[in-house]
Amino acid sequence: RGSWSIALFFGMQSMGFYSCLTWLPSVLQAHGYSENAAGALLALCNAVQFGPAFLVPVLAGRRRTQTPILLVVCTGAVVPLLGLLAWPGGAILWMTVLGLAQGASLGLALILPVLRGATGPAVASLTSLGALLAALAAARGARPERAEAPPARTVIDRAVVRCRVGVVAPVGA
Image 1 (spheres, rainbow, N blue to C red):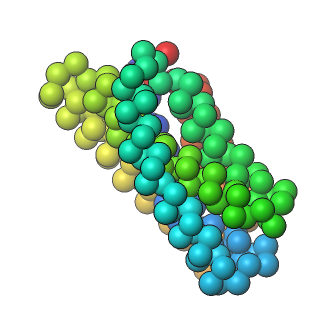
Image 2: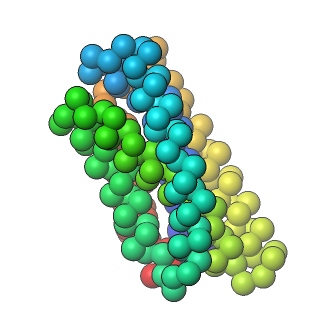
């Protein structure tokens, strides 16, 4: 159960990141932002990911369970997407929070195999399984099915699925 939970989180994290990378500029443009503004907001989202990507593994390694971190990360990924729908004018805030959550989820996905694997080969196995699912999920999440952007609801649905997987099968519980 633990290895599949880690792998699914790894995959959902990757799918969420690449879905947002692919679709959020189009969603922002649909809400009235210019191409330049949408690109700048995506750049902001990506720039703020660095800090949490390095901080969260340290914090996760100091805790007996990572479930509270997982819940915060998932909430931080869903709330900004809903916020973009409810209040598109707050895109700077929403993209900042989304970037922090995505960076945190990457850091958490990368440290979980290390925390759960009892031996070097176990860590390698968990990481390989996670990377495989991440690549498959990312390809599915970022695949353009048509030329125009999907409805914003599609991006949000994918983020909600990412969090449901984490909540239904919490790692470290």
